[in-house]
Amino acid sequence: MPITATEASRLSRRTGLAEDQFCSKDESGIRRLLNNQQTKACVFLATTSDLPTAPGICSVYDSRPLGCRTYPVILDEKDLAILDELCPHTSEFDEPSEDDGHRLLNLESKLQQ
Ligand code: SF4
Image 1: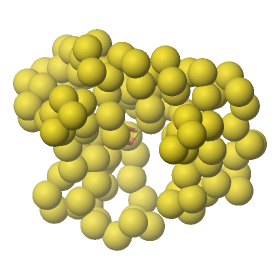
Image 2: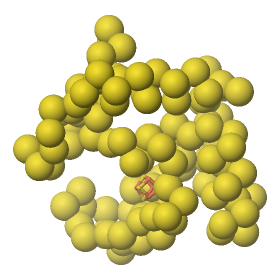
Image 3: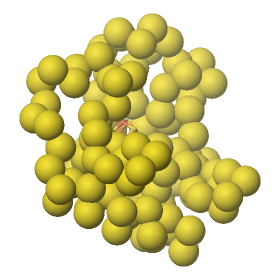
C-alpha cells in the first residue's frame, strides 16, 4: 500500500515505530507499507496466518492511510477509478464515483513528496 510522507509520520507517532520498521521506498521513491515476513500481510494487520482468507484486524485502523480507506477502489491505467479485481469482496462495494478518482489522483500527486 503506498503512503504519503505525512501518513508515515502519523503512523510513526501513533505506533512509536521508526518509519523504516513499517515502510520503505520503492524504485520510484514512493513509500509503501512493508509486509510481515511470517504472515505476508501488511505489518499492521494483526493476524497469525499467511492464508489470504485468514481473519485479521488493522491495528492502526483509526490512523490508516487514505489508500487503505479507499481500497478496493484503485486507479486503472487511464487514471479511472475502478474496483480492484484482486479483492474478493468487490461485490460488497458500490461502483466508484468520479470523486473517488479525483481523491486517488490527489493522493497520487502527494506520494512522491
Ligand atoms: S488497512 Fe491497516 S492492515 Fe490493511 S493495509 Fe492498511 S494499514 Fe495495513
